[in-house]
Length: 434
Image (cartoon, rainbow, N blue to C red; front, top):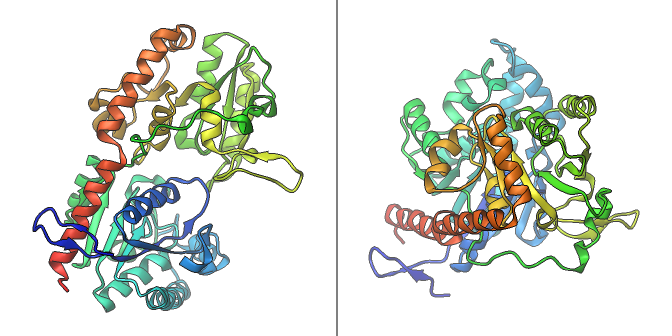
C-alpha cells in the first residue's frame, strides 16, 4: 500500500501499524467509542490498528487482552482502596504498584513485538488514574523505548473531586500525564488544553469528539420496530431519553424535574445506560425521587448493547442507534462533561436536546451556533416552555434539528478528525524519519 499524500511535503505518508492501549475497549463508554472512530479514520488512510486492554470486544487476531490491565482487577482494586482519600501510603502499597507496573510494562513490550507496531495511542490511561500501575507502566515503557506515541486525553484527574485527596502525588506528577518528549498530547476541549499547559507545562492539540455526519443514520428498520413496546410504552406515550450512565455528575434529577414540570402523564423518562463505575446509590435515589414526584421513570440498560443480538432468554438487544429515533427529546442536564458525546449523538439522530450549560458546552460547543433549550444549573418556566414547544410544534422541532445537524457536520465530522490525525502522523514522521 502506497499511503496518502503528506500535504506539507507532497511525499507519501507511510502506512503505520498503530496500537491502541487502554484499560477497556468494550461497551459504549466514551473512550471505547471514540477509539473506534479514530481506528476507522486511520484505517481509511491505510493504517492498520491493533488493541490492548484488560477487557476487549475487538477481534482476537488484532488484540492482546491482559486481564490485569482492567481497572476492576482485584490487585488494582486493592491498590485503589489504599491510595485515595488518604495522604500517606504504606511501603507495601508502593511495592505492589511497582510490581504490577513492571508486569504490565512487559505485556506492552509483548504487544508491540507481536504486532510489529510503530505507533501507540494511549486512550485515557495517562489522564484518569483509574489504574495507577498502568499509568506507571506506560510512562516507563515510553522512557525505555522512545517509541512515538499519542496520548488521547478524555478527562483529567484534577477534574474529579474523588481524586483530590490522595497518597500518590509523586506518581500523579510523573505519569498522569507523562511529560515524555516522544509523546504528542491530544485533548478534546479548549479548557483541557489550557489546564494541561498550566499544570504540566505541556502543549497539546485539540481534537473534539466526532460522529460520521457525512453519512446520516439509516432510517429505522423492522428490527427495532417493537422497541417502544419492549420499554413498556403505550401508543400515545412520548419518550424523553436520558442517554447517559447513571452517575451523579449527569444531573439526572433535573430530567425528572423537567418531566414533572411538563405536567403531562404521556411523557415517560427512559434511561438507556447502567449505573457505571460509581455505585448504585444514585440510581436508587433517582428511583425514589421520581416516585415521590409522580414521574414515570424507566431503565432500559439491560436491553441496550453495542451490537444487535438476542440474549440467553431470546430477547432482542438494541443499540443506542435503535433507541434515539423513538425519542421525542433528549435530556442532557450534566453538571460536568469532558466533552459531550450524548449531545452530538442526539444531533446526529436529529433529536432535540435540553442541555445544562456545563463549562465545556458553554465554551467549546455552544458558540458554534447550535439551537437548543439550555438551562443554567436549574430549570425555569421559560426553559420548560421552550421544551414544551419543541415537543408540541413539529415544524419548530424539524427546523431546529436540521439546523443543528448542519452545524455539527461543519465542526464535528470525520473529515475534521481525518485532518487532525494526518497532522499528527506528519509530526511523527518529521520527528522519526525513515
